[in-house]
Image (cartoon, rainbow, N blue to C red):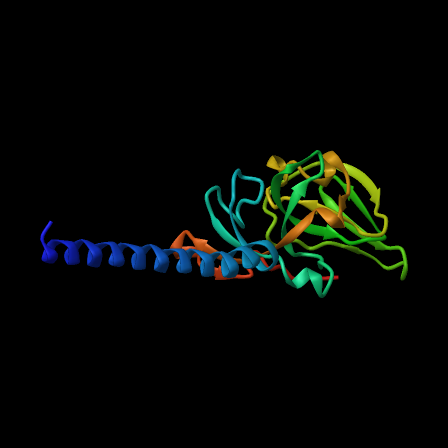
Length: 195
């Protein structure tokens, strides 16, 4: 082998090693930045099914805030992602309707909330709910339990079927809808209630 060819081979090997080293640095940095964010701060989810129609459609791409509930408790009206109590490997998206230590009564589709501490009672006005449903049930929630329902009440598997949602199964709340592009929004599905 001629000295010029040897030098050319050594230069190519050095370039390849340098390239591989740069890629390894990039992957390492990406992992130490992305993994903690995905585990502790925010995570993407794709809506599957029609239980939250018209608020969310099948295929909506969401970023879920996993951080804020470390500093404050979930609130009525929050749209949350949680692990399904009957199979924690599955994730569901629903709206919080009743809070810990409240009693929720549903009578022919009318939702009434009674706070066990203040003894206040009010009918929930739900502008986002267009579905007609005829359920009748009463559930008294314990500490760290929530009652959740889908906005499309007729097509939602929710607390009416499987009971109260334990706080430890809550992953986070819907922070941003990124897709479809014509529905991009921050805190999608945010609801305020008339009490």
